[in-house]
Image (cartoon, rainbow, N blue to C red; front, top):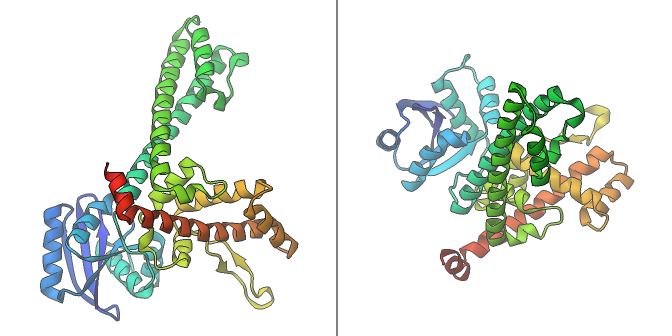
Length: 353
């Protein structure tokens, strides 16, 4: 088996091929275009045959086109987390950092970790990923605008300063706008401009959230049945999972989400575990929100399970880690159920109409 590792950049990609024992076989740099990807594919096939596995560092924006072109050509593509690539590079005998070294590290990481998730471009998950990412950008912009607005208002009149979250409501926006319209000076003018930005961004965010809610109710009904999983959290889970069928097991999904505990014991601390700090942090954050919500809701399985773990001697943090791992298992099953429903002829017909 030959593994071709890719170090991707905005304008070029560097590929390094290794054999089954990690020995370097060849290197190629091409332009980051579809034509360049075809050149790399022809080079790999001519030099190493048709049985190829491609390892790509998981840089979703820069690697998306490369993944699509390779998958469209019927190639097997594996995503390698950036931290795993860096760890593999540090453990190598070749010192330094360069594009070929990084590409070789990606290829060797694929050999070292045979259970890495394969790349896929599920249309539904990509749609929700793009929409949730756009919402995150708008929310960050609104938060920045609100902070600037509050400083301006504080300079005009410290007693008129609104609470940060209150400015998301139309009534508070209108009340503040009415007061600012009567205030003279440059600071008031700048405050009115910031408020206009907040109003515009809030309108866009609300429209996006409505669109996300409608879409996620169509494609992820099983996921929404999980207590504590709202529309936006479900959309984030589907988008970041990027096609649940690419995971070999629920344990692989948990590792990818960074909720699989890792051992940190030696000698007298045998059996001690901690939560992984690697994995997809967006997935991890979504699972964390569900876990915290379930722990607070007294009528949920997560609340009861958390109490049992604490009664067994776990610390609250350790018990919460156990709850997150349990929730990840249920999320994986729900994602699979929703995926299977979308693949059925009836569901596909409904979706197309």
